[in-house]
Length: 484
Image 1 (cartoon, rainbow, N blue to C red):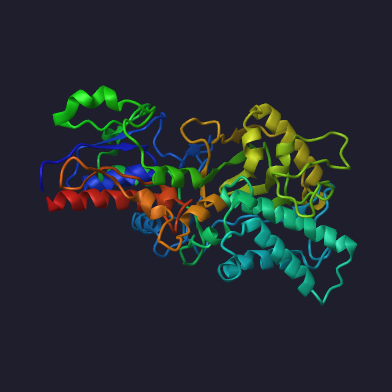
Image 2 (cartoon, one colour; image 1 turned 90 degrees about the horizontal axis):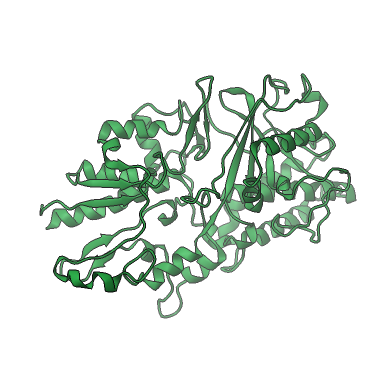
């Protein structure tokens, strides 16, 4: 191997840290990770509570087992809970409207069938879509097919209204799950590129907390010594040792001292990156009984201008309310119970609502959500009155200047530039991850490499996608220097 290089990594998220670990364990140990914030972890952020339990502001689960680099690593270190017994569940519990009524099979026998049909339709998406179709239009088609095929039950006006409200809840659920602005911007074809890792369960917990993965990395290499906290990178320069007099001429752009490739810029601008937030409410005592798994909000009196409104376009007025809620409230999917936190509920919120919520104080959010719970929770679920929470914890990913959102998605714009035309043109994610090389010599030396969950074709939006991307780029450097 030639002289060891100095390597700088921007960002101490799981991609950057695992890249550093891979480099260090293969002999490239002159590594610095520049982290702009005051902590490591990036979008993994575990917060310890007074009861010594944890809440997750960021990543919540490991997604699947097979071909999952994070699961494989964590399981060998005994970090994960038994996926057969301790696993995550999304969107569980009662479907409730603003009158405190549950919407179940007794109220409408097609509710669960509709949700299962829409969920299963994602597996059929690959064979049923046009290249420029968006995810929202696809789900509208599936909803209409479901209504037309439900011949065993007469769908009158009342049932149809219930099913439309359930459909709206499902759309909000999908917007949050995909961290997008709305499903109309999401490419149905690119949606099918994402792959789930198979296994006993899809949503796997860490035994302790998500950030425990970094404690294990610390055992593998001197992580703490490699990280420079509160070290924001302001500019990337290419300075050749035999050409130092060109430095000032090169400092033309705000961040890059060179012309950043057009095709990479176009792909970066086309990749979607949305915001979802979590709001944790901690009560003195739980007001819900032991049978409750959550409360999913199905508004029944929303007026809008479309039969199937996407949440970014709907004009919201609740007919039955004398006291209007702020618009962002209607971007909340519902309230889930929290693992190992018997006195806590967590609300998921996405799209523009997640951003608007961040402008409100914790106190204001607490009061608003208390009123929401007092409206929606059915009486048969109560064991005491619903009082204001003792504590509230809100993530604010969009306001954070070093994140400006939660995770990536694949947009219609991305799909259009990702489509190859007749002469083989078009840009795809492989062009984005191709390094920028030193063209001043003949050795094709990689100078600037690209990682992060958004750069993985199959596993974008996940921590294992981020981890895999960090390993990918580290191995690229290792291969280059081993060949010299």
